[in-house]
Image 1: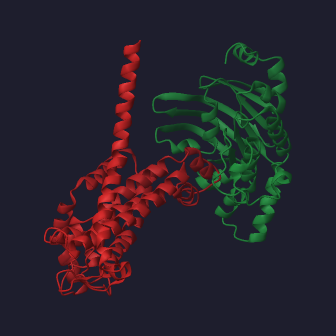
Image 2: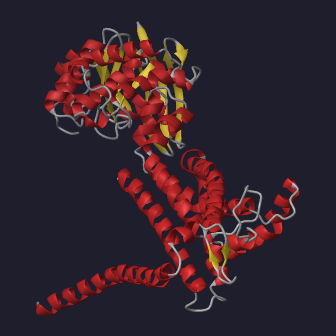
Image 3: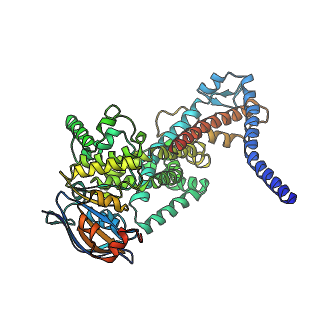
Length: 248
Length: 289
């Protein structure tokens, strides 16, 4: 089933045309990896999906993006961002305790019942593979966690508001290999319940976790295919070159 | 080579001297203040000075209780703080977060201009506009009240509060806001639950420095608070502040008299109050870093 439908999407920042006529679908319960060199438009593509680009006053967009068949511009932006969660490149916990970081979004969306919040927080931390490491110190500042733990906390925070889709924006760029492996494990488990779009600079990561992979270059979607196919018999020469590390 | 080293040495020492000069002058001022001010306590007790209810410096013998002055200063400052904090922090939030580009620059320029107005001009404007207004609104015999002073001083504290608080809000990592918004927060929820707490120490420092500015202000308060050295029963009566007392009476006090020493002792009290405020603000600022 198609979860996200992107049709003829174009995006500009001022005069720079950063996303050119992208058309692709994201299937439910898949991990779609988006790869490409810097300035290829992949982060713009990702932030277009939850309308975070709208924060920039110079941003302009044309084309349509549908979530479950409905245009994302017609859902309220807060509801859209609740449904499409996002995990950022740098793990950035809010300046609150571990517990409050996860409870923050839940409260914000109107849940007041203390027991319910506690349950949601515990469940989210378990799904983010962090519960065992933090269950005895939920009251501590989130800044005391290691980088990898902070990133998993950010994942848990996103999960707690019960999204349908999770966007990962280079989630492991600041992490060591062991933390990276943990985050990747979490992603693979999460796709059973959620749909995941993963933007990554790490081609190997795309190969490890992605069901399908999309390759962007200079704002253009060059190729999208199942990860296995793309990494063995890419259709486009440029894709081949990038995957093999000839440029990037 | 030696020439270069010598040059280096001279410049280094010159810079060192300039650095030391500021500390040196502060210490000199402090010592002078102490020498002249503490002489008062040879004749009257510290408690009689700080807690005495009457300030009649030229009666015989002089009554030198500064409690009415301390209360006057505190009342005016408290009033100014209550007025300037919500408006100042609100303006900072608006400028840092909400105002679109051009308006933001205009507002920032306006705030800086407000800081540049000499206090005597503000006092003058207050005298002809604010004072009659307060008089008519509250049906008072005179508009020269603590409230008028508070409102006027709130304007003077505002630039300090706005610019430092705005700076604190601006320097929070952008990702905090994005992180909150990405969770589906509304703009206000992001400001209120994430950005304000993250900037809280900077905002507190801004408030403390604003208060510091208010408590040390002299000219405007002297012009519009009525200068009655009595213990104020409400904010709608004339009061006299510590600073206004020194400014108004220094010229006529006989050098070496008890009155003269008492004015210096008031200086010590003011010095201690601003010292405490500045140290507190500093603590908040450093916590932020």
